Every structure is written in C-alpha cells, then in structure tokens.
Length: 494
Image 1 (cartoon, rainbow, N blue to C red):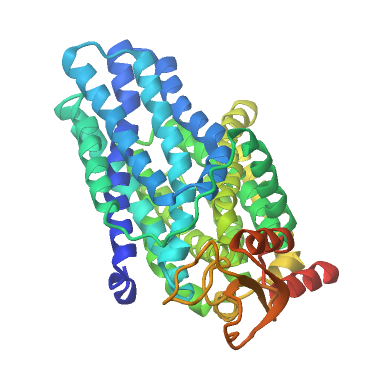
Image 2 (cartoon, rainbow, N blue to C red; image 1 turned 135 degrees about the vertical axis):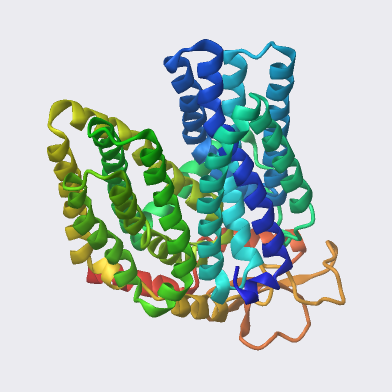
C-alpha cells in the first residue's frame, strides 16, 4: 500500500478487512473438496460442492449489482461477512458433532457464492467514494495485489490446516470473517440515499444497467476482448496441467507452477501503479494480449514444471496493469447509482468465460494432441490480439489522469442534487429552485438565495418534492456534457 493511501483511514480499513476475509475464504475453498473426498470418497460430490459456489456466484451476479445500487453498500458488505461467518460456523459445528453431510456443504458453498457476488460490486462501488480520483488506479492495483496474495496464502494454508484437523480451515474462516466484520464496521462510507424499490422492479433495473453498459463503447469493447482472452487462457491453463501430468511432472512441481502464477500476479499488481503512469492506456491493454500471444506457444516446448512455473509468472505480470487501467476508467466514468450493476455485469461475463474455459481445455485435450491443444489456445489468443491491436476504440482509450481531471472539474458542489446551505438543513415546507451548471448537472437551492458561481437558475421553483420530481424527470443522463460529447464523437469516428 502506497504512503498516500496508507493515510486514508477508510481505504486502509477496507483493504485490511478483505485481506483477512480473502485468506479465510481461499483456505476454506481449497479444503472443501478435500473434506468431501475424505467424507464420501466421491469426486463427483466434491465437484458438486465447488460447482455450487461458482454457479451461485454467477446466478446471483446481476441481481446483486442491482441490489448494491439501490441499498446501503456498507450494510451489504457487513451482511456478506456475517453470512459467511455463520455458514462456516455451522459447518464447524456439524464436523465437531459428526453430522456433516454433502447437502449441508452444498448450502454453505451456495452462501459463499452469493456473498461473493454481492460483496464485489459493493466494494468496487464504495472504493470510488473512499479514494480520490487521482489515487483510484493505485487503490485498484493494491486491491488486485491483496486478492492475489490472499489466494496464494489462503490456498497454501488451507491444505496444511486441513491436515491438522478437518474443521480447522473452516474455523479459521469463521475467525477471519468475524475480524473482517469488526474492521469493516469502522469504515466511514459516504452516505447515499437508499432506494427502497419494489422487488418486482429488480428485473427492470438489471436490464437498465445492462443497456447502459452496452452503450458505453470503451466498456463494451474491453469487456468483450477480456472475455475471449479469459476463455482461451482458462482453457490453456487446464491443457498445461494435463500435459504436465502426462510428462510425469511430480505433483509438487505442479503445485509450484500454480503458485508461480499467483506470485507473478502479486508482483504485477505491485508494478501496476508505476506502469499505469508510464504507459499509455492502449499500450498497457494491448501489451497483455501481445505478451500472452508470444508466451503461450512456448508451453508446448517446455517439459519442466519449474520452467512452466516461470512461464506462468511471466504471463501474470502485465494483466494487473491492464485491469487497473480499465477498471479505473470504468469507475470514474460510471454514475454512482450504476457502479454496482457495472461491476456485476463485468463479473458475470468474465465468470462465464472462466467457467467455460476449463471445459474447452478438457475437450481440446481429448480431441487432439497436447501440443496441438496448446497451439489452438494460442491461436485463439492471437486472433483476439489482432482485434485489440486494430481497434480504434482502444487506441483512443483515455488516460486516467485526464479522466480524473474531467470528472473532478464536472463534479457539482454536492453529490446528487442536495442544496449547499450547510447552515440551513433542507426544509420540506421551504421554497426551492432548481439550478443547472454548464455540464448539465442539477442541484436544489433555497429560493431567493444567491446562486453560486458556475450555476444558473433553471426556471423551476416549488417545494422540495416538486423540485426533486422535476430533476428526476429531466436529469436522465448523469454523464457531464463534455463527457457525452466526447463519447458521441468517438462513436461517430468509429
């Protein structure tokens, strides 16, 4: 964590809480299949438990994003930590009582999956309010490093803890989620108005979010390219693991291979803030595709687990920089009341690719030789690399500093359209008027008061409810005018 962010109390608490939570989560997830195998001896049952967690996360993904946008994000994050702690505690109690069953484990895995689907968009949306725009890319990179570290350390510890006792990794999971809950409770998240909408509208809100995401050309292009890349890389990873087993690579070396992928991700995340400042957005994004296109075919020539591990580490170095560039831009340009649905939509798209990729890899290994399977995966990555290289949208991908400055310059005096008279709280019986600035953003103002610089009277006056209803009717696009004009010109040029 950089020096500037380390002085941000809210971000520091959020980061620390999730470092604990992710360690416990990954320790329990690696212990789950070991527990099922030890209890039943069935590989199918083991796959059912892990598959339930992944399926629950995908199914809950889009509704979770809509819930995050209409509810208190801090309460959602606290609820997720509490739910995971209670679910893990129930499994510990069942194990100690000798009554653990596969259906119980399936339910616990489903709770974990739904909690993950809710927490990710809630955290990403909160991050953009806790951290200044100019520090957001560093915060995104540090979160990526935290996730990689939690996965690497938690996975390594999970097997060791399971060897001590079947209930031990899940006990650790209970403790880490409880500690994360306590730490999160001290995070001061900026207040936002919750929208208690009817449950029946959730489908409409999901559709509205998906339409908004699809209309944003930069988001649409980057997500489509990332999905295809994840599909072929996930397939490639399974192909290489199968090949390593065929070549007689010891199980210990295969474990090191997987660990090297995580270690490369951690190093890449630590380098990301520096590279984001030095490289253009286009180069940071396209560089990932070029590097993977060049490195993937080498796996067909290397038969050493240690060398493949180094290859994995090299492949993992640049993706955090591209992810930081893309995610920072998306969070800065997305209206606050759509950030949950943005993150959820992207998470579901990439999750589907990550789930389908291993199936594709297994099918390729079954149909062609190992070397040919590697080359087919490399060809798929090369094809999407060509599209990325030629994409005019990615060539014009804006720099984060320019985006941060544009967003900061267009920010109204207060979030949403609340009045600025700090000494006079909003009175339902008072008369208000609607103001608009040159970026077509709106605010409520006590009638008869001097209008602040940069704002103009819209000509609408009335009660608070009347003015708020008027703003809700006319302010349908939260993007600043300058941003809309730039994005429209980009679309025309394309």
